Image (tube, rainbow, N blue to C red):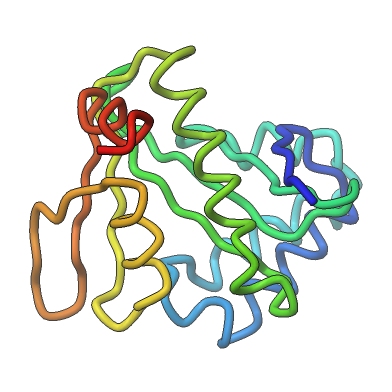
Length: 169
């Protein structure tokens, strides 16, 4: 079953996101903090659900990953250089969906979008050195390691390397 991406965030989606951000198994490798949870909860509490999409897109672009019309995760693109370079964060929030290539399929959709529609130059990901799943995902998609420190690896993919991936390297 294929996943799809959507921009609109509904109240039930926001509640799922909060649940995921409160789960240590899901957030152990994310850079999100409790302020994200509080901010999303405030929007819900103020009965401003129509502002959720706007709120989550303030620093870039936020997409929900849907499977059978149910949100199972998200992709967040943070602007590094407007219209040139973005950082990608991806999370599958439903643990029973881990290891089933949903993140790969969602990330492939985002890569098509950013390179062919938006015409950006580069996309990067900062990955915790202990996150073997994400390291495998990004290297499989032809991201190249650019930087390393004790806690984080930075992977990058430019348009030419993306074309190499599409053509089987």
